[in-house]
Every structure is written in structure tokens, then in C-alpha cells.
Image (tube, rainbow, N blue to C red; front, side):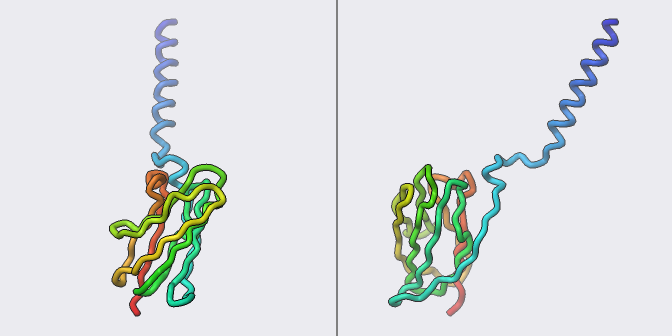
Length: 138
């Protein structure tokens, strides 16, 4: 009988190992949430203006923004009920202040040369709160 018990325990352990290894996505579920929304800046008073929502799902909406070279204003609105958020263009001096629930803040900067750039929430970057700024040629 001890051999039968050992065989059963070994089989159970093998099934558990196979089940655990079958899960191929090792990212936390918050990082697997989709990024949505695309917008093009609206020209207002010489500025290209874009409103970006931040939410409790650690995503920006829109997550892709199209602008042209020149002055850009990003208006960040925190529509969540929890943590504060900010908007920061990586590699540039363009960051909003931390923005609490139901509040808005903005940053104005000169869009860099044509190309693709990443923006993030500096405190939720690891949760995947990122987006793409696409600067189109003039």
C-alpha cells in the first residue's frame, strides 16, 4: 500500500506542476489591460490641445495622441476614484503635477521633432499606465 500512496502523490504533484507551467502569461492582470483611444490635437489659440483621462484601471484615454511640431497643451483629467496620476513625456521636461480624484492639471511644451515618443504616469508606469505621442511632420 505505501507504494500506491507514493504513486498517487507523485501523480498529483506532476499534474500540479503541469498546470502551473501551462500558464504562459506571467504579467500581472493589471498590465494585460488594453490601451484604447486615439486622438489628434485640436488647434486653439495657437496651441495644440489634447484632453487625456486617467482612471482607476491605470490607463490613459486616449493612449495614442497625434500632434505636429509646435506648442502642445496636455490637459489631464483624473476620472478615477483612487490614486492620483500625472502625465510625463519621457526624456523631456513635460510633466503635469500629480492630479487627484476629480481634478485636472495641464502641461504646455514644444513638441519634439517628428517621431514616436512615450508618455507615462510616473507613479503607475509598472502597472502599464503608458501611451504614445506621435509627432507628425509639418
